[in-house]
Image (cartoon, rainbow, N blue to C red; front, side, top):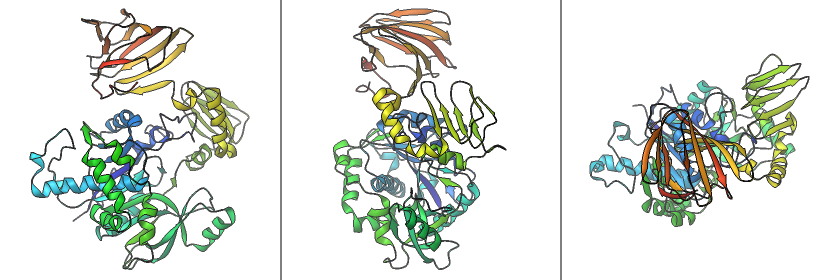
Length: 512
């Protein structure tokens, strides 16, 4: 019988290594840097058409409150209707994240086995609906949400082999076959071939990022692979290993789930319990302890040679992307002349490059980066200077995603701000008021249902309304298509924290 695989996607990381495309509130896993899908979406889609196992259509995504609505929206866009999105109040590394997924998966299976699912109270924990997918213990496939893999057939072959070992109660990690002595990755030291395995090797240990000479020695030895951060295991196998080495992580995760609350596809962990959880990686909490010392090869490494990249900086993205005849990589409205070995990403306007080589040019609505392709690993220092100049440019994009749609700040002055608001079909903003600003709405596309004070009415295209200071109001889209509104704000303070929410459909009463 083919095993069942359930994806566990780690999507809580933040950072600006792909600035200006990535921002603190919209990190690289949410970016579409290689095509129409974001790295998160590509990670989930990677198992499409995989035939060596049954793929559970309900991935477990571990992220945080800040990204929850964008993550949920991106999953809906690719047809994921029943995800479970676990919201961490703080980051605690990969071992607790996997432990949470393992507990949830084990509980679902236990409820199914006992037939108790139909009697389980709702509202505090995820509903557990019996399903044939839960009849056998699934294999959990843990993947980072911000990596790139270009050879899907090689990836599928490695996952198929990994699933076989996981079914046999082994803990499986995937090691990237190195093609250069890179000092930017941690390494896995491998031992002998596992008896009867296609490619799997025994796990001898992990090493930190080496210096150049050590990395060259690793490459020449053939005994080291890059650490991919991908794992496969059954919940029972994981608990058996974790409870020997870090039972405190198991206890803390049980406590955090015991006080968790369920809100649609979101599961909010109990904050104090999870903050008390130790922070540790899967590598060091468990895998390192089960290496060559383990009887029977409990921990194994499956080599992965599939065009993998962690997309750590723009230069790396150029190296792994398809190129034109001049070795250029371009996305968006781009025109190149007499240009070679250059990466150009245009987001909102035409970008032209003439007579330039070995560049990275990244254009967004509010910032542009021009860098030597070999210098993008030093972007951290530039981002620090940008933060000193205008911190907003490292935190958010001009277009800001919300659970009801998005808004784009078109213009701003000392006492005014102009926004383009797009409300998704059937969605509505919170019922709110502002202490410091008034608003004027003009409908430019669709039909708006407007609440102003005690009145509720509809506005069609080219109609407008004024909302005074301290007046409760709400904007909703009752139509089948998007609603687009131009909003003009005026007042002595225009910050997003001047929002007093009176009602909200998205659990944001304490958010800005």
